Length: 134
Length: 382
Image (cartoon, rainbow over all chains, first blue to last red; front, side):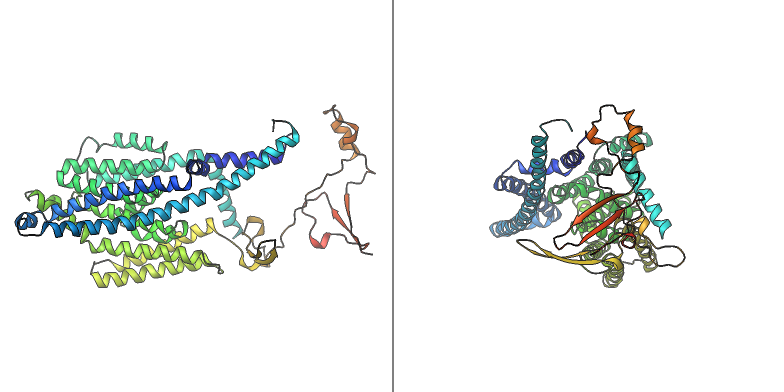
């Protein structure tokens, strides 16, 4: 006889595993600190690259002015200004990244809790029937 | 109304049944329209400006994740920009790279929204998207719609009839880059669209999630009105030269689209809402349950009054009649005697519940599953 409860449970779990579960299981492989740390490292690289591209475009945009005033301008002050903007940009972007990935980790944890609860339920059903067939 | 509900349910059932075909066909047409639009507006590289290549690529996109459509769209536009000039490919490449590094790596699935936003801008219908996007998306969708507007504005700068192509052929490289950057950063219409669409999406999202009656309908109306007000105010302030007649007409269309989205996604009957309270060891619960309007629960015929909800009765361990058992004996010989019941010939099944105070209720479960409404139940109290 087919155990309807077992089939429903297994179908639900299989559907979760094929969809959202894939992403959540990939997240759950890491400890919270490791996962967020890894994502923040990626964010740091991306933010630095983007800022560098922005600065390059800005310099190219004002290339003629830079060439004319290169020997008169205070390069140290200019570099400090760029560095300050970089730090601000990085801090804001990292904060946003932290918030996003911390939320994703806790959201994945909540979903996986329900999934493991269903696994436990399924295990109890198997132990109760002593049969591996649905 | 019942006819509309039936049509809706039929569409939903058809989609569920045939989604393995519908999804690839949808992706194919989206990719086809995107690439054909890019080729028609840019078209500088003749090798890829070919219907055959577009068809092959679109066919490939139909079997891959939806984000691949944006990838190929970006690739096509970069190749056309490369054929045009070095400056164009630098600017287009930098904008795409920054878009990916700062935003798309968080939400790769939003690439479809970016493509839709850019396409609607290309077809001069950008005002259609924000209200439905607010109903279906999250506040992050505002960024996706804005990114689509930026992508469209950037590609418009290097389109065939643009000032960059027609007027800047003899300019220096630095001047060309300056022209492109100015064209993007000083584009007031683009800025107005980004602000108006972002405000609309956030307003629609916030209102539809409020625990108020008709939240979705209110959010659609409010979103449409706010989008109009912001566009009118922005047009006056920035002098962008928008045609208000076209804006108004498209906003009415957007209202219609949003109401259709609401009909499919969130149709409930607030008249039959129930509030319940209960508690467990940790919390008190105050719950409001609002039933969905389904085909059978819709308004009844000529009187116009809503039908009573039908209670479907589930038989609990139904007893088999003698005739049914005898009929089944021939098919399932392995049945034990314990599984066979013989009743007095009556088809009804009574379940008694005994209460400590001596009163009991008999509830009648008939064979007809539509029976069992409160009026039909038989009660005996003593």
